[in-house]
Length: 33
Image (tube, rainbow, N blue to C red; front, side):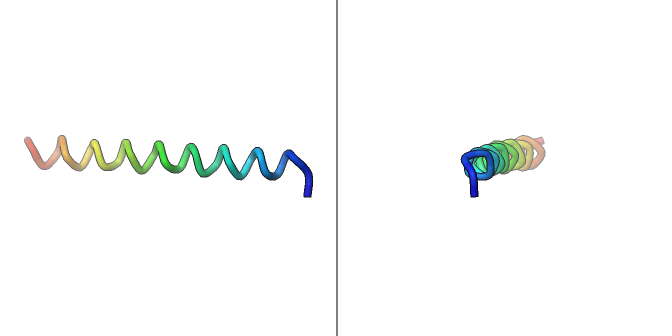
C-alpha cells in the first residue's frame, strides 16, 4: 500500500465524477432538443 495506489484511486474517482457530470449535461441538452 504505497502513495501511488492512493493517488491513482483519488484520480480515478475524480475522473469518474467528471464523466458523470458530462453525462448528465448531455442528457439535459438531448432532452431539451
